[in-house]
Image 1 (spheres, rainbow, N blue to C red):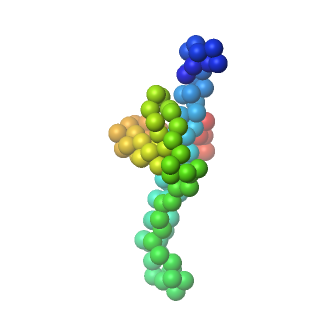
Image 2 (cartoon, rainbow, N blue to C red):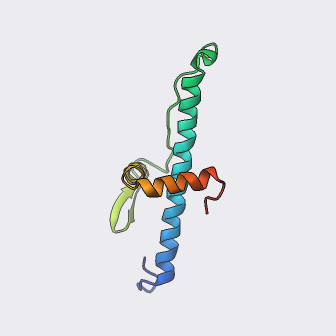
Image 3 (cartoon, rainbow, N blue to C red):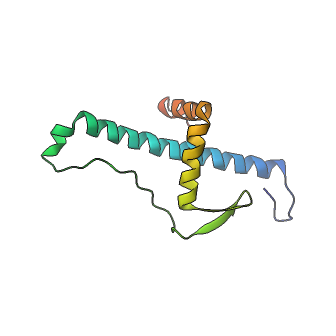
Length: 109
C-alpha cells in the first residue's frame, strides 16, 4: 500500500493486511450465520411450515452492483469481493478453519 507520498511502508502494508483479515473474519462469520440458518431450517422444517417460512437465502447488500474500486491493482466491486472471499475460503482451508475456530471461541482478533 502506498502512502500519500507514494511510498510503500511496513505500517501501510500492515494496515492493509489487518483490513483484509478483518474482512475475511467478518465474511466468515456471515457464512457461519448462514450455515446456522440452513441447519436450523433443515432440522425444524416441519415446525416452520405453519409460518410459511422458506429456505434461507444468503443475501449481500453492497454499495452498488456497479461500484468499482481498485484493490491490489485490480478493479473489484462488492459482488466480486464476495466471490473472491468464497474462492479464498475454499482454497485456503487451514486459514478458514482458523477463522472459524477464532469465531467460535470468541477471539476473532
